[in-house]
Image (cartoon, rainbow, N blue to C red):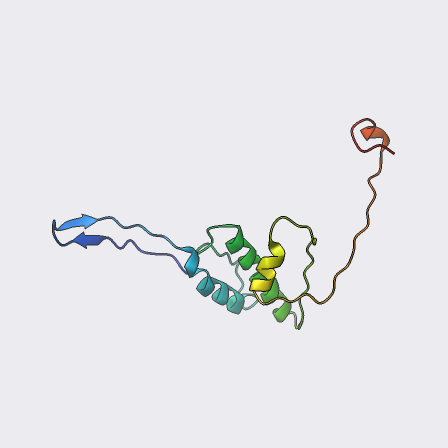
Length: 125
């Protein structure tokens, strides 16, 4: 749906055909996101976004838009996410930049357990 056709350029000084193969740029992500969200659940087909996905942020945006489209299709009016407060990924900054807001914060408690098969390889009891 969003594939490109080959569009060479012409150097007017030398009259040579100059190959110019630009398949996509990160700026082109919004159109596929929009149409994938519109078509999701309305066509009997698998949908994938490739145009404009050039880094982890592009992947995260595509996944978030898919979650939102799925929630809307199911009649949900709210989508929630969780991220560790000390996450080094910067996910909280991405969510904020995309218009998500913090509703509440929680604390998670955990304790590592020493299992017999792991004796000597993990934390001490």
